[in-house]
Image (tube, rainbow, N blue to C red; front, side):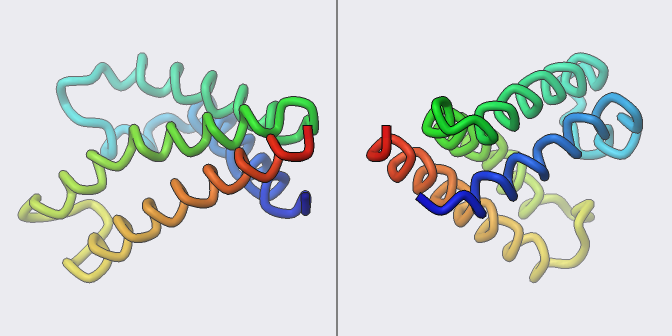
Length: 121
């Protein structure tokens, strides 16, 4: 299996996990009001950091891919919710629709990492 995709996602998740700790205010507007922002940032940092480590390790890469895919599925309702807001955080309508399609692509790519890495193990 090519390592480019899992390593790329591992780096992105690592940076995001660190950002959730160092600059949580960047993420706070993205967190729904009914979820405590501090808790969401702490949990996101832990989950993203753990998934990044798994994506870097060939033995656990399949689990990292599956976890990444499931994380993207968990975030999908937030992106869909943004579609129906009068003033979405990401900008005007075309951007919110594109964001949903990007999320679907990320779900697929995480699943692809899972499937390919599992075949290697």
